[in-house]
Image 1: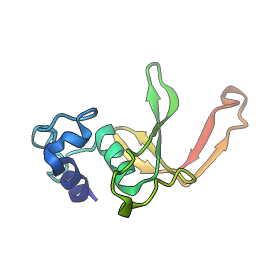
Image 2: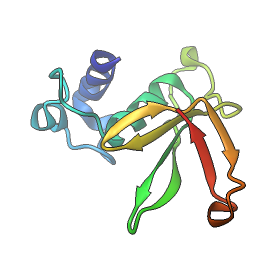
Image 3: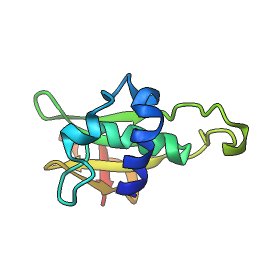
Image 4: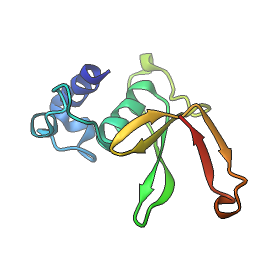
Length: 120
């Protein structure tokens, strides 16, 4: 998956993703090297490649956890087909690692009422 994202970022000199990454992003971030952690840029590119939104649950600010949804860019080529907005891929970002979420529910613990609980 890493190599596919790198190839996609390098396609067309990186101009397609210039809103989220500079054309030299791959070289500067070294994301093409094993052991280098991905960021929201790679999540956005993956959402576009998979034509499916990706929701990431992570801490913002004062340890408040929120969902951030990465919507795919619409592809200009008809062969790719329409984006699939009926499904989402769920990830949790904890300690700078993205982990898959296999279940999402509302917590019943009083201090977490109306907060989402996750199973990873």
